[in-house]
Length: 79
Image (cartoon, rainbow, N blue to C red; front, side, top):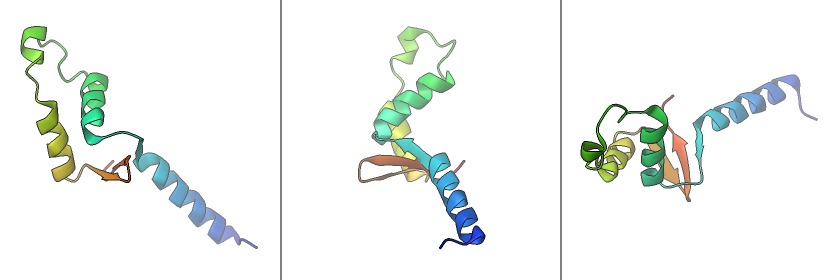
């Protein structure tokens, strides 16, 4: 039998997992999605926006510890 404390702990763990889980994608795919969703390049002409280095941004996200890829799944390490 699960005790109330055990259930509460499981709910906290599930909540933390849901907050951290980004999805079934690569860091590079996430970098593209992040830039698009956050409008980082809004107001930048398409002529200049085409030179945005998504691979470098993805690398910075991973090396900086913002995200981690595990078995094809991507997780936030900070939020």
